[in-house]
Amino acid sequence: EKQRLLELQNIPPVTRNGQRIHLRANIGLISDVNVAKTHGAEGVGLYRTEFPYMARSSFPDRQDQYLLYKKVVKDFAGTPVTIRTLDIGGDKALPYFTQPKEDNPFMGWRSVRVSLDNLDIFQTQIEAILMAAKHGPIRLLFPMISNMEEIRTCKIIVEKAKDNLRKEKILFAEDIPLGAMIEVPAAVRLASHLAKEVDFFALGTNDLIQYLLAADRSNPLVEKYYDPLHPAVLLSIGCVVAAAHNNNIELCACGEMATDPACLLALIGLGIHEFSLSAPYIPRLKNFINRIDTVAAEELLQSLLLQADSHSIREALDQAIRNLP
Ligand code: PEP
Ligand code: MG
Image (tube, rainbow, N blue to C red; front, side, top):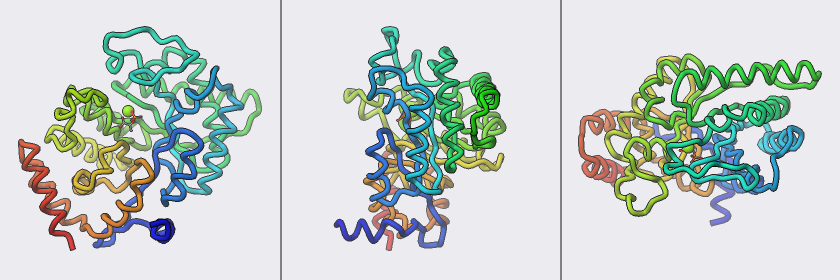
């Protein structure tokens, strides 16, 4: 098993018909970096920066954050690292930051909404990320975008952060790619407009599924409603892929969905070639990707997108997997 892991580590995932697929890691704490590397992740598609914030007793200052982000990007030596700004609220709290008690925390004051209401904290984090980007290919990602004003304000804060670093005569990277997470249904419908504001999309399947289907991702009582192969999910993802494609920007699918082979086949069939997921899944997904053909997957999805019932979608995908060479 260990030997097999090592063999696979440096082999890039390619489909049977020669399409290169990128499998990147989701990371949180610094200990995840090694897990990502031993499992052969190609860089980081989602660095959840709230985890290092959560592990402390006060807000990290700019220098602390800079050193941490720099260490991560240097560890990945040239492969891209997508750093997402603070995504607290919902089920994630900081012990030293008062968050109001809310009746519906996942629909409440969370993620980029908290950042935009605390511009000092937000700008400090962005400055640290811009500084770290001097040391490697960092991409900056804003979570839970639900309207145009938010992404435009985020971009203004990036410019303010740059002005401030210039004033302080601190080195930073001028041109780092900016991205929006597409994880709220409104952002799906706005995707073609959002695509004109950013350099890449990160599809947040965990949240997108829960918001589309009104099924809390962490509530076992509604687990059966939380269905990644619900046709509404696949159709929505199809719209996001089309918007990214038409505007020539990159799209990375993040979240647990891609760890299920049937779902991964569906996402590849929808035209997605870049994924970010929990690293221990990577070796077995590489094996799976070697066996599939993207043209066949795309044809299959064309017909599945016409179906209204997720059971038959699941059955057709399972059948296609059983028939793989
Ligand atoms: C998601 O929502 O799919 C995602 C990748 O981010 P998180 O799980 O941190 O909300
Ligand atoms: Mg999310």
